[in-house]
Amino acid sequence: MHTPLEDLLGNRWLWTAVLASTSAQVVKVLLILLFEGRWRPAAFMETGGMPSSHSAMVAALATGLALEFGLGSPLFAASAVFALIVMYDATGVRHSSGIQARLLNELVEELRAVVREGFAPQPLRVLLGHTYLEVLVGTLLGVGMAFLAFRVL
Image 1 (cartoon, rainbow, N blue to C red):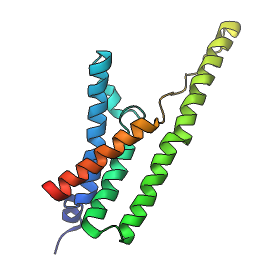
Image 2 (cartoon, helix red, strand yellow):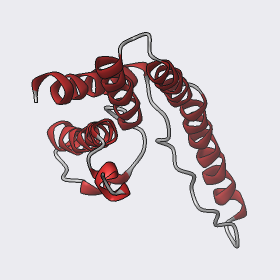
Image 3 (cartoon, rainbow, N blue to C red):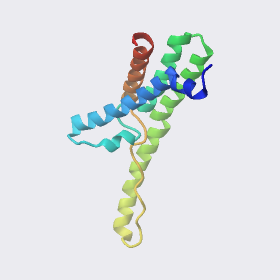
Image 4 (tube, rainbow, N blue to C red):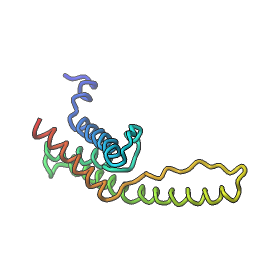
């Protein structure tokens, strides 16, 4: 008989998904270092950018469930639907929100130049969502991590 803590710690699907997401965030920091020449470890905690850690996480979960229980299982079906919603949201709603934030920040800067005194709203976060390529790379990373965890190890 296992304790709930043992069950949690032994949940390969959960930890494979967490590892995939964490790996995507590490890759994000390394890509910034490689392409921008800046060491920016704070990017590890940011949303948006290459690759999508959300996509990596849900793809790892769905792939792990498919490998263990088959493509016909209800667990895979639920996780695949969940993954598609997360990926659609990352490229749709969240990406659009980032574009709107950029435009609003530009408007605020123009207003600040006119009003000057007492007008100091905080800028909105711009990097919220993902491009299709960022989601694709995150998805491939998640699928690869699941194959590694469930077929190789």
